[in-house]
Image (tube, rainbow, N blue to C red; front, side):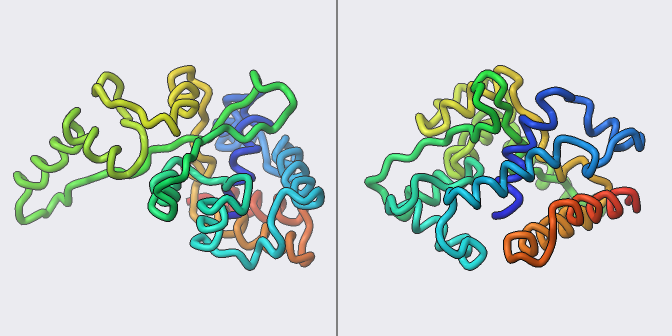
Length: 227
């Protein structure tokens, strides 16, 4: 999941000093290539050069990466909270903990990317609108939300639901409560092409076919194309 490493690093390097970075991007006052995105990308490549990843990382699919982490063949896996439940399925006897990925040597500076895991809507032309709205209302009730996050292995998006946080997510819960999160970067981009360019560009960098500068320039061009 090439983007998750970069997102985790960008959360601190970019938004640590500028929580308004997205607003500046939207106003044309900032760009990927002229921002600390370059710092985050450099740290990402340093991780690869210093042996932080398994051999042939581009040849390791999502399922295989889970297997490596679940069986203790890697120190960890850079993923979202949803992976905890998947790891437990593969190794019920294992103990797994979600931790923030630091981007600097000062833990107090660390921010993490966060986003809603899912959302529901009702079609305006739904044949059974009343039942559909009843379902959505149930999902957003304390009872429904607790049931959902227990199965999904996450945290409720609303406070005071009475949900007992899984010990593996204790640190994540603290970051959320302390407002030390920023939105997943792609959620505020004007189109899906920016992310696709990033994904393919990262693969090209790791396979020696591109450079960080080209990747960020291409992302800027797609961003400026708008929605």
